[in-house]
Amino acid sequence: MPPQPDSAPHNRPVYLILGRGGQGHDVLDALLAAGRKVAGVFDDDTPPLPSDVPILGALADWTRWVKPGTELMPGMGDPAERSRIAADIAALGGRLASAIHPRAVVSPRTTRQGRVHRRRLRDRTGRGPWRPHIPERQLRNRP
Image (cartoon, rainbow, N blue to C red; front, side, top):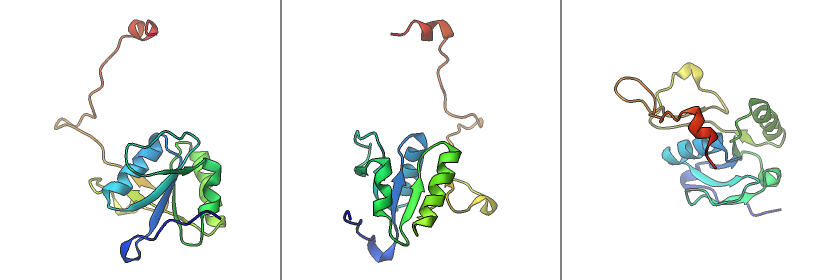
């Protein structure tokens, strides 16, 4: 059995993230911004993360790290896959964690296990982040 992540100070939970696509990065950002200890990420793609959180293994390896009470957060974007992983977490005795970014404004009625609430970037007019418009013909001519 692989070594288990050390427990965080003051018996705070240690989190494991499953997958590191866009959703996985949002989960990691929210947990780190909230001061949570993230032991690592499981993913089949192994380039380093933009933080010092390690890649612990392939996505299929996460089940060997679970012991009762382990906090896990699915980081894949597909809702069906997240639901399947959530059922596997419960069956192995792990806990499905929630991640709320400290700058997110969240109604208490929307918070439950397995949710990720991230901050939304808006300017003073209420619009989201600026994205340049690239005409379709320029996109087709790119190498």
